[in-house]
Image 1: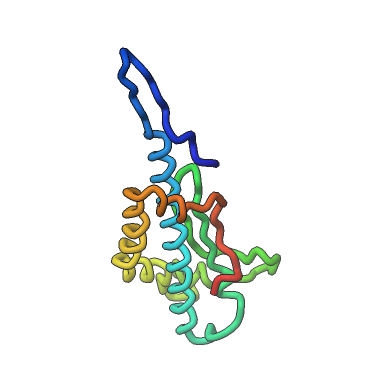
Image 2: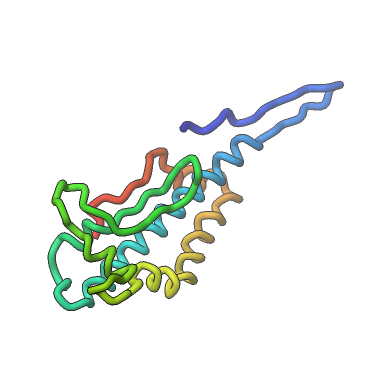
Length: 156
């Protein structure tokens, strides 16, 4: 979605009213999306580090490919979790889901939950950095990127 028109001008009795509401709402929404995207990349990287400490997970492509995130544009929220790989490997990372939630044969490890709770301060710093750009429109436009953010397996 492109940037809305810069201003709306209304004239009444020689007085001109200028409204930047649409532009400001767009900037806030896009900065929030970009901040969520950076938070998702940070959480994914930290979860991969935590998974690599588990026995039997020191190397390989499956655990990083099993962690996906999605920053939704309409709702402006972040979804992150474990799932099957996008590469078509069947039964790829079912064990990550069992390790997160626990099962009859697998103890509950809460890897994703613990990473998020342990890094709340860092997440707040990332969010605050982007939201501080609201005051400077030129900086804000430099950080806004008009694409849908989804995880890619190239980030590691």
